[in-house]
Length: 117
Length: 106
Image (tube, rainbow over all chains, first blue to last red; front, side):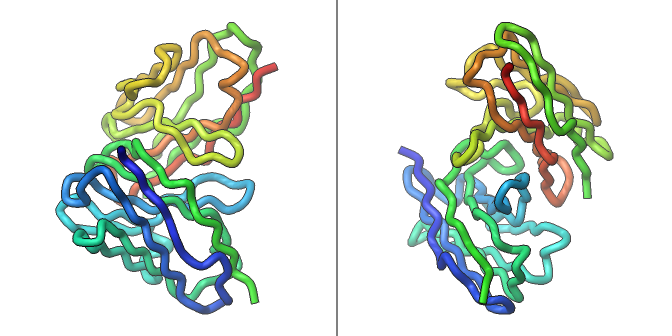
């Protein structure tokens, strides 16, 4: 069955780089897009980045200079890197599957990332 | 970027009909999707492409609209529908979410 699972450090120091991994099963990364979405505590959803089925990428305008998304199809993994972390980057980070430019029909449970010294 | 505007909160009684709106700052054709999120859970896709009901979602949920104005309708509302509802557009890059509408069932 379709599954997505996020992994990464729970705590990151300010100004450091965050690396998150989304490991998927039950489908091929060359057939579906993967998006990263984050949600600060008590706030709404913010779309961060996507890697489309063909391998092209898109980024949130405000975060673009700090982001990198890539994938390893042999490992069924999508990697998100965000540099220069600040306290406002504290959030639950989700990865989600969609058809290219479609709704996200499967989501991971999320990983909580806290930025603090 | 395309801004999606949602009213912050609504309160209705069980059995009533509720409409949740999402207005886009520019045309998104029918590239709007609706999600339900309950506290402590990941979002759940309800409607994709403005009006297509995701398999397994109760037919009480429906979506409509095109261009800049969209609506999610729940009819009739049940107590379990207490949640925050988000719209998302995937027509224009970058993708964006609305700020969410918190639905309270009285």
